[in-house]
Amino acid sequence: MKTNIISQIKSDFPASIVVFFVALPLCLGVALASGAPLFSGVIAGIIGGILVGALSGSKIGVSGPAAGLAAIVLTAIGTLGGFENFLVAVVLAGIFQIILGFLKAGVIGYYFPSSVIKGMLTAIGIIIVLKQIPHFFGYDSDYQGDLTFMEADGENTFTAIFNTINHIRPGSALIGIIGLAILLFWDKVLSKKGKIFQLIQGPFVAVVAGIIFFVLTKDHPVFGITEDHLVQVPVSEDLTAFLGVFTKPNFGAIGNTEIWVVAFTIALVASLETLLSVEATDKLDPAKNVTPTNRELFAQGAGNIVSGMIGGLPITQVIVRSSANIQSGGSSKFSTIMHGILLLLSVLIIPQVLNLIPLSVLAAVLLVVGYKLAQPATFLKMYKLGRKQFVPFMITVLGIVFTDLLVGIGMGLLTGIIVILFKSYKNSHFLHKKGEDVDDGVIKMTLAEEVTFFNKGAILVELENLPNDSELVLDVRKTVYLDHDIVEILDDFIIKAEERNIAIKLISESGEYKNLNSYLEFFEGNKAY
Image (tube, rainbow, N blue to C red; front, side, top):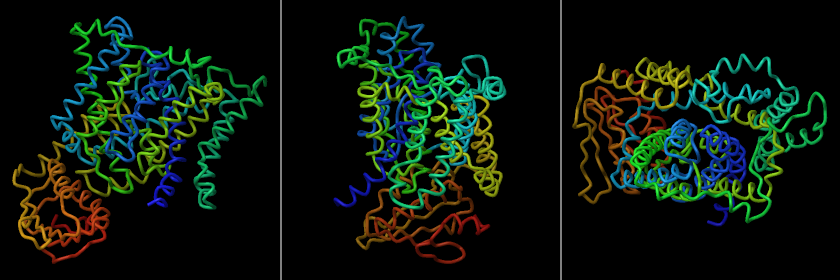
């Protein structure tokens, strides 16, 4: 047991450092875009890491302030009469989220088809790459973490890239290129040479190189980097000054009906973004863990209550941080919680050091994260799955890239529903289960003629509730349409079945098969489904 803990810390602590470097500029950037004090974004990051990380049922999800809420926050601070009044709405939004958790509204997350979720991940990867190109070359007109097509300064994603040509900063560009080279060399070569290169992550080395570069070239007329192209963490002279930056909500304004409207809006949008992120991170998780969504809503609600009480922005689970955590080897809550602790300690103890980090180096880190989310092979894989998967996937990608996250998801979901309705008809009796009342360890599930992504939630619950050391007999002889999402669920369950000693026997028209290595290969190769 002790060995497992030590082994987990060895992988999770380096991952927490990477997530910390990804989260820091995003926390500050979202706060800037929201028209809120910069420290409010850091507070949300700390609470999202420590409190939400501890309460959540997700092992790899990371929470913090989300760019998707920036426009809502910016407008609300103005209309509600100040930041202190807005904080009341954040606290109330957290209470609403806890209520949603008790009402089991988390099941909504299961009703997004995997083609849409994969489209969302790919689109976010593309956006990260496109948005970081200007920062990589020293053009920092837009804030770090912006995911919308239209930017606050009047530009859009593509015009900002074109305008970068006229605003290249030699120092920022050079250390950005050096940082990216370090990241690629570390990932492709050094990480395979020894455990020390896995313990010390490439992003940490790139950031240290960035600080050294800034110090050595500070007064250079060409390669010197000015302060507006560095991380800008608020600096407190002592502990008293540090505690003074926390802001309390003005509960005297709680009777204002506009505050309640804003609170409800934040609760709905934050919950939806969180559930989408949960579904996406579970899809990326190598261990294929299934996050309890109602518990996640409760954790997010608790986080927003505390964040609002001490002057923080609204919190959601965030895909960019979560994917960075997974890519860096994070496998337990330790990495999530530790990144929150690192945020707290860094702004308390070494804010001056953080303010020596060039933004272009952090852009290099995010470029790698974005590319891993949007690899070209993903498009080819989705294309090979057929139009029913590829069309919603592409609509989601294009919708998110050219509008924003929720609009793009809505477009993809609508497309997925149209495709399903076109290909199948509604069948409410999709699953018949028997054998639980017989003490022989065998449970039989018979799938009906039509099983679509609408049935994901129920099937996930049934598989999770199977007793350990049992046998599942899965009968698909009557099934004429089995959605790709359901096949993925069965394929993902192989890992958990092995861990829980559950044998799986598949009965199909072509014969009986025990403990298949891949349900995706079986059903994709069998034209009957």
